[in-house]
Image (cartoon, rainbow, N blue to C red; front, top):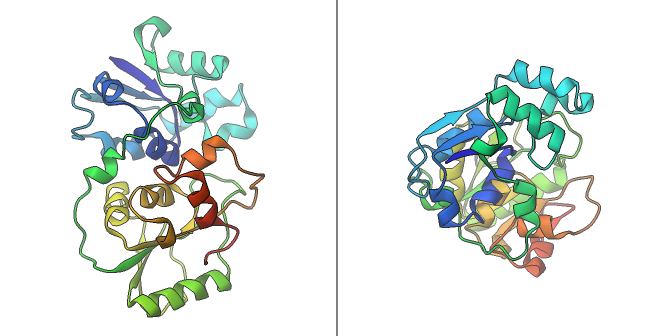
Length: 266
C-alpha cells in the first residue's frame, strides 16, 4: 500500500524497531515527507523485513523549504510534513499529488507514545554487514545537518574517559563525524561522512558506544548491554518521558537512566 511518513533519522531507527511485521509487509511505496528521505532509503531498499516495498518518493529540499515557509518559518531549515499536524499533512499530500484516501499515514509520534507496542527488534541491525574492525569503541561526534542547539557538546573530560577506556580495553576508537575534527585519542580512526549503511554496520558490531544522543546511539543500544553504552544527553534535557525511554529499547527505563547522562563516563 502507498504509505506516507515524515521522520528524522533517529526516529526511523526507533520506528523500525516497533512496527509490526504485518505493518512492514503492508508497505509497497513510501512517500517521504521529510528532509531525510533520501538518506534513509538505503536502509529499506532490499530489506527483507519490508518484502513488498518497491518504490520510494522524496521531496526536493527547496520545495520542502518553500512549502514550510507558510506553516512554520522557524522550521524551514528542518522542514517536515508530519501527519499528526493536519495542516502540514495536507501540504505534504499536495506536494506528492496524493489524496488522503489513497494512502496510509504512519503517525510516528503516535507509535512512539503507544506503550503497548512491543519491541520487535531492529531490521537494520539484523541485516547489517560485517566490518573490517575488531574490538572497537564507536564514537559519534555530535555534528548535525539540522541547525539546532540541542546536540550535546563533547568536553575534554569526555574525551579523556574514551581515551582511558580505549587503553584499558585495548580497543580502537572509530569516530564518525560529518566534518574533519581533531580527535584527542591515541588509537583512533576518523570516518568523515560515512554512508548510513556503513554506520549501521559499525553499530551492529561495536564493542562499546560513546558519544551524543543520536541515531548511532539508538542503533548501538539495540546491540550492547547497558555497561557498554555511554550516551551524553541533550543540553536541553528537561526530564524523562515514555518517548525518550522507549527510544533505547530493548533496555528497560532503569537501564537507560544509567547510561544516558550529562557526561560520557561511569
